[in-house]
Image (cartoon, rainbow, N blue to C red; front, side, top):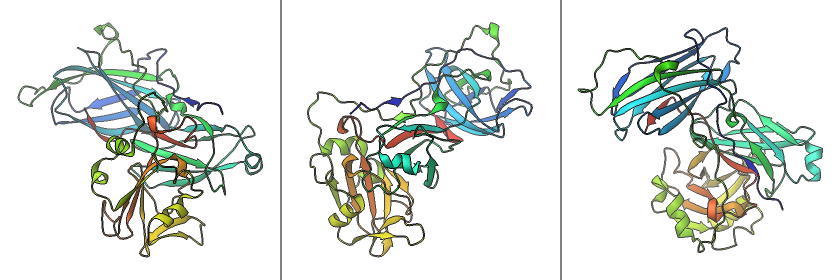
Length: 388
């Protein structure tokens, strides 16, 4: 079997195109800002520019003294963005360059079936579910081209998400895909504007009425983005010669927040083969958890779990799933399942039917050929973010 091939493409620039004041307008509420203050950003693209209503605005912040960079990317909807950045108290005092660049593309996801089977040629479709932190899970079907490739255009979500693909009617997910996110390919920006910002520890020593000025070509500053800032398909699979990892190691590295508290019980998918050998995740969970039942919705045909006749909340790598989102995960790709009995409310509305938290194998815990149907992807920066 061939090794997993993921196109981890990074942003780079072949040229910096300066924007006229009438093409890309960037306004910030200050040119000096102190710790814990919030910087407001307004961006507008001129109506006559040859850009789709959906585009992407990249912001690279560079500390002039050290060259350290931060990268944020925002959706430009109808050529406009309103966003805010709260300045962390950890930010060093000094001068920073805010470099804004417009990319014509919007976030999309491309893929192609590797090692197809006969039904792929016949059905020409894949089912997918997008599980994001900031919105309800999205379940849809994507059509395959004649070469069994596909594209899902114009995906909008904040922070990170899981996207899971499956063949229609497949009981055990053994789909293998090659994927890429075209937004992260090398590109030449349509427009770029750079502005200066001074960061201070407190407001008393940071007050200024000076307007934020554009950096000019003869200011001595040249922006060169770092190529490894934004890996968008994670995690890569690495196999090392270290000692064998245990389920306790995995839990220390991957379980956080409210999930790190006491659970009713846990199911180990690393040190035993029982879960890997299960043919169906729903039936396996029901066999291990007394009172848990697998139900089927008569209208949609979707399966879901109930406990004491109440829907059971499901979390995938600590991202909440909708009750009716398909759980098309191969049990062999699961490292850990934490079970919280009914009445243990981890989040609002999650306690009546209990909670099940599923953690997928990654890094040293994963086999080289595992998980080629599910991907962890990074989306857009939230409009209310923190600079730290």
